Structure formats: structure tokens, C-alpha cells
Amino acid sequence: MKTGRTQALFGTPTRLRDVARQAVKGRHCSVFGCTTLLSTYNTSDTCWLHTVPSTRHPLAHD
Image 1 (cartoon, rainbow, N blue to C red):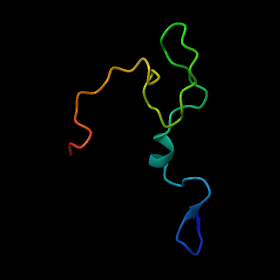
Image 2 (cartoon, rainbow, N blue to C red; image 1 turned 90 degrees about the horizontal axis):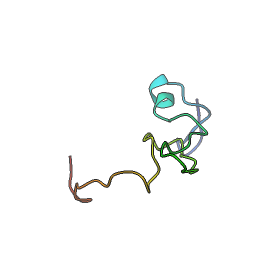
Image 3 (cartoon, one colour; image 1 turned 90 degrees about the vertical axis):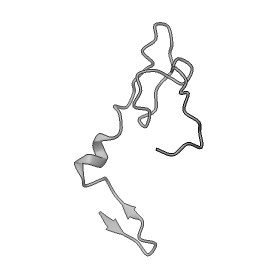
């Protein structure tokens, strides 16, 4: 990768760990009849509508 003046990295990730974090492009929600196309950043098998909500408080720290 190449860096510019702002130390921003350009180009494809060189570490396999960074590449493996993204899901496959073009996946659909696994619920029958749902045609939602999932983002590559969504590692879940379902869209936001069909995902069970989390009961963790949004300001809670791990």
C-alpha cells in the first residue's frame, strides 16, 4: 500500500485479516421471500428487519 501526505492508505488491503472481515458481495437476506441485498460489511445472514434486536444498552462498554 502507498501512503499520501495525510498518511491515508490507498489500494487493496495487504493483510489477509483485513480482507477476510468483509462478507461476500451480492448476498441476500436468508429469510424466505425477503429480497434485501446485504452489505459486505453486514456479516449476519439476515437484514436489519429480520435480525433479532440486541438487549445490550447502546452506551455500554465491553
